[in-house]
Image 1 (cartoon, rainbow, N blue to C red):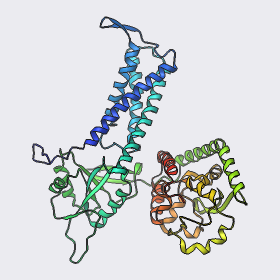
Image 2 (cartoon, rainbow, N blue to C red; image 1 turned 45 degrees about the horizontal axis):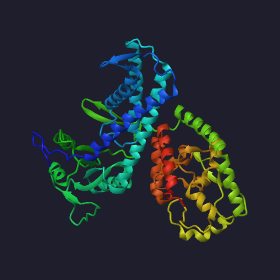
Image 3 (cartoon, rainbow, N blue to C red; image 1 turned 180 degrees about the horizontal axis):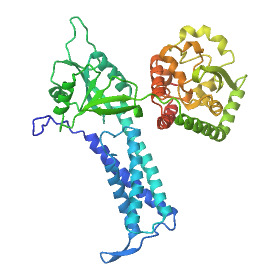
Image 4 (cartoon, one colour; image 1 turned 90 degrees about the vertical axis):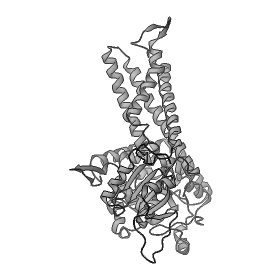
Length: 487
């Protein structure tokens, strides 16, 4: 591994980052150019406020120069200033898109300031159209690039950071399990370093090599890692962590500290420094207030629009069920909702009419645990129902439950259980309205264990936001089309 002038090892060149950034620069340039061309094609007075000028002995439209060269170059400059090309934001989902949105706001402010400073009577419709088109094209292209990057990571494990996990074996294995469950996040653990030797007779088993007693920087050099993840509070003393951070200065290596507070993310976490001591301030989860009111209003509006737009599809599904199997089209079942209130959930019937009577005979074939009951090849499911379940179309009538305020578009799934079954931490699922889709649906659905499903639901309850809901809805589409964990 190369070294700096101070003898510190330099992280191996991460070529995928340079290539990815180069692709993003090209994509952003094309997006800005496409936004300008779109506005020119749509608005007849797009060049209002500009005039032709002579350049190199010829006449050139000043608007053409600004639209085809000035806007793209200004856009990429503002993106760079907003950190949209920062390696810490590459492929990080909402964080990357937030920086693009901030850059778009800065772009609008810059254009307005320049127009005012140079006293240009620009068309307001043109400026607004370019800004909006630019935001749309940039977000779509960036989202597409992120999908490609995550797919490369899942398929080939390339374009990922090579991580050395440092900490007690239990803490390191917990982080390893979480990270490897989502290879699209771009973290690939390659080894574990234990701060202390195991006790006599203690057996150490791990899916990656385990090292003890090494200096971390030489070990990173030997392994070719580019990230050190300190797992748990007892992994390193405070002075050791500070010394490690000093050693990594100028090396290009990333240092990640996994806090003791887990499953808490987003706006709930703030760092509050006092006399050089960084305090991790954890806010209370938002389970009431204006945000929930806005969420409820958006849910009902979206449910109403969805029912109207999907009415032909709903009618077709109802007809298919009626023609292939005698019995009711819809299935109603009591579920437990917010604050333990029972309600009737609506679904398209996917099972034969005697499914409830046959349930007890199938108990011993249950492939799930906890409060869940799942069988991959459930004999009670009708042929049409199997296709409906695969694409989650049987859940569409629950838009009526959302419209009535009993459910939300996003939230923990309502389960066919009694209120008394929710005990201990599991009862926190009932603090919010149940949803048609949720975090565990986009993370594996029926393939997950009950423990994982509860963990994901509680994570959602503690960290939900409107932006988080939009992200879950977006991912639901790809999960449903891929039929992952649906049976």
